[in-house]
Image (cartoon, rainbow, N blue to C red; front, side, top):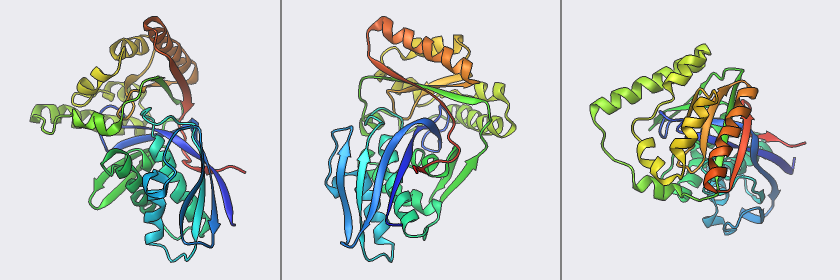
Length: 307
């Protein structure tokens, strides 16, 4: 195989109580990419549509992730990359992760899968380092593994796939403002109290338990963030109203997707997810902010080839 076309899913990171360690892949929104082998050594971005992003290899997250892949590969050639962005940069649903993971996943497929999925996460994290200044894995891991993933450890890297309840749906609203991950990290506290930590650990453990036992009530009770959300929500117009309206419409829980400005909610069943979407839209229509809304089942496959 000399060329492959792929779908790279959007992702929700943090998921309220899992800052930098928990993420999930979406099924209804994502980028498309075409990657092909070339005899010339290196990574070459040959086409980029949908967003105004750099095409220089060392300034593009797909290029940087691809270079990390090549540096540990025995392959003597290179790769050309076409990127068709459907995920807006700065939206908070893993735009940089989709490009980073798509590049290395496709290269690995074209070379007969010399690297494990966990190793592909490491390569993809270099794209995240370029985008945000921090090589975090909570977006790239679910994009590659599919479903929910827990980053149990960064040193050494240890990714744990988490069970996904069959009836779980995500609703994501993206107000048309941009918040850069690097900027949203600058306002976070670097120290927390033991009391705050205990609350957060309890919710994270509860959420993982709820996902494995498919206890939707426990999932809802656990989708609480005492540490990051109170600070980052200040940057998102209408956040509290969206959250209140989503819960009133039947959502299990609601929070900031990644670093924002997108807001996510989980629901049991598609019908409830649609009611939540309407409740979210009503808030932004009243305050006059343009927005996109996505309703999605959980993508348990991750990146996939487009035939």
